[in-house]
Length: 206
Image: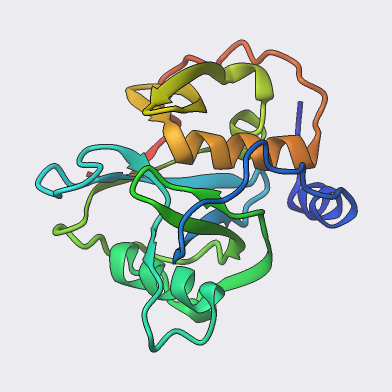
């Protein structure tokens, strides 16, 4: 099926987000940008974290990080981190809203900030933080049936996690959970895509 940017925005505004399955833990705050590329068929931008990072090395993620004292809001945090990691300037992003915060494995309360990125935005990856960036069709990313769930036991707590493959990219954990939560809010008819396991449409940066 097709999903235009106007259709996505209408559903995002009109549909309330799903209530989180667990209370958010942690008193440290962070934010990620969920970048939707403005195109005839909108795409979702994701990154693969650099292999030398101390935490979450090599994982697929959204640009984002911890809130700084200089950030006026968590939206500013997401925009600043996206600029630092992939070179998207804040004035190239139209923020349309946020999703309910989620708890990261490192104990941060993370707020996903949904933003529409100008189609002409050029990426400049920070090699200290990002190995590569890629896009996937937004309609495919939001297809709920592409996510498989599993339960992880940490101490006396159980955590519901989600995972999915897109080409050679393994999307799991908090990132997959955020995309799936957005998919629940947009609530598209869940029709399996014949190309859901096809090769990547294109890679933006090596």
